[in-house]
Image 1 (tube, rainbow, N blue to C red):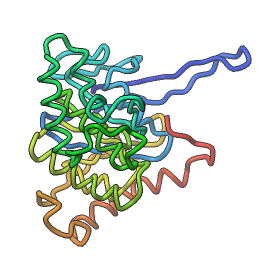
Image 2 (image 1 turned 180 degrees about the vertical axis):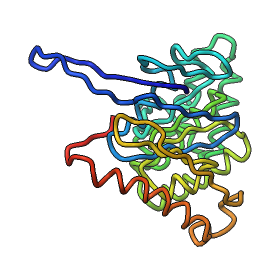
Image 3 (image 1 turned 90 degrees about the vertical axis):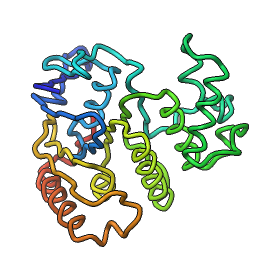
Image 4 (image 1 turned 45 degrees about the horizontal axis):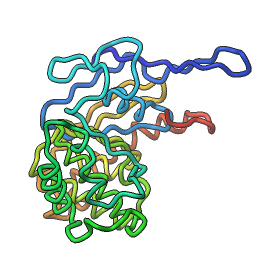
Length: 263
């Protein structure tokens, strides 16, 4: 991403309104990197992720993936949102198979095999015939992650995926994600508000400034991997990196108006 800018425009009572959400943002993510994006409310984190996903356009600058300009969604990317987005009338297996059932180059047998494999990765073997309402929130989010993996994208785009589940389940899901990433080495761009989560998961933390958002700093997370094999939060380096991220965000947060909202 180079010089990326995005302005939202709308009318209110016949009067033109606009909001500059992202302004001249630069961010580079290499293949296999795990990058978390964090910043104060209203800094454009979700807008940035949706642009990379190809779900919304941008006004200026450039977004390229493997040298190709992003002009819309593609099979090389899969998105995991905070809302589970599961079809309530479909089984867990059918929901997980969905990305492949719309592709003419994949047979139903191949789609089912891939879905079952990825459900096993997220610990949901045996729940293939269940429906979303029969699952806890954490289990539903596991289905969402399995569905994204079944699409076999090069890039996973994750927008606060664990934000709506309880704290204990969130910790479990973070470790599950780290294990899956260590096996697959997918490129991950992960948006979060959670300081611990941002540092725990990433190779690099991109800290956005208040809206209009731009990258004000990038911090290398030089903590040993695999990170589920030791008490990560007790590591002195974890505390140092977390404190640096918080100092950056705190300075911006206290200066924001009370009504500021994320874009």
